Length: 191
Image 1 (cartoon, one colour):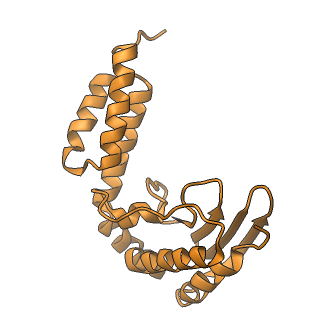
Image 2 (image 1 turned 135 degrees about the vertical axis):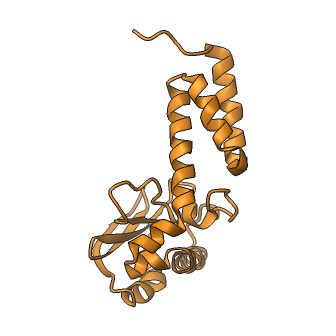
């Protein structure tokens, strides 16, 4: 690959984000061997960042920032999927400009659909809309921390709280966690 994907990012996002008052504040591109492009848009403390990074499994990555001091979720795909993980994930890796352009447009459409309150600057409405998602994500994070610290009693409590929100990814993670628990046992002695 010798061309940058930055023009595809700008073609999909610049005009729609400009309608909300966002302007480009940063552009970054790296060629071989890393293939990385990034465009960052900002408006009054809010930011939307779009990147292409061939080394990752998400080839059009969109994050948002600036909706509060505590931001448990920044990835657009998490907002689109919701607490129960209902929307499909990203596509496969590509070095093809047309494939990337189509995915960038899809990501922009998701951003406009799921983050309109954020783009308009209505943070109370945005936080209300995603309150449940933020709480579920905070419990997922607490469950992860309990697993890595082998605090299995806490882990079991968080896993139970997530029962109605378990995704296929959660189930796969639970299998992995069960294997770690089996190998290393419960709550290691603290020093």
